[in-house]
Length: 254
Image (cartoon, rainbow, N blue to C red):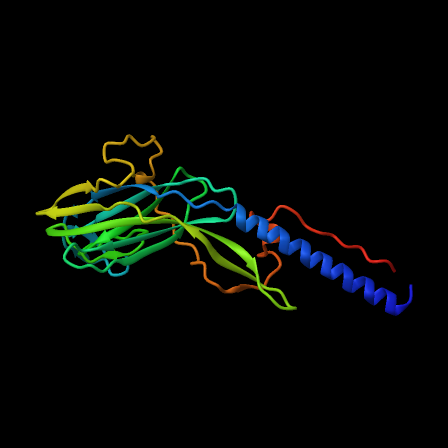
């Protein structure tokens, strides 16, 4: 085969491969269903404790040291979101809060669903918390008094290919659920009352969770927030992820 013929064959094959990948991408994008409104459970926990005063011996000087008493305040809000199954893409959750005396919602979490558990669990420390732990953040509300409202949204993200000669892959939002109904936590003198709105289809506070309840496990650390940033590496392309179901292999003649 002469050089002109080989170049023409390569060009035709590249066009065929590009058209096949585009059609496959379009098919995958169209097959991603809208995620369901998330079901979730909110729990208030008070694991505060006191450390009594004590004495110890300094190992370097031999002197007696006095260790003062301490109060460790460890009050948290835990959010257990029941995971749902999606056929393609990556499932994420957005969590937002607001005070009832303001109309503005504030996002506090954008996390990928935990694929190894029935629930994705987030833990937030209340104001004044001085305990150590794997907290998702601090809520500016005290158990001494205040009201905070929570809502959750499910999102499906997937990879798409850019236009142009040099292709890059982008992680983009495919679809999202409606926001859930509102769960309200009311604090009064160290006590918490939790209620849900009539359109909240989430797990009720009386629901019996399994023995390996996510409320007793470590919170899921937030993964990298998906953005419309190009994915440059081949290993991060959808050809090797859950978004794709086939690869075109082209062998050119010598």
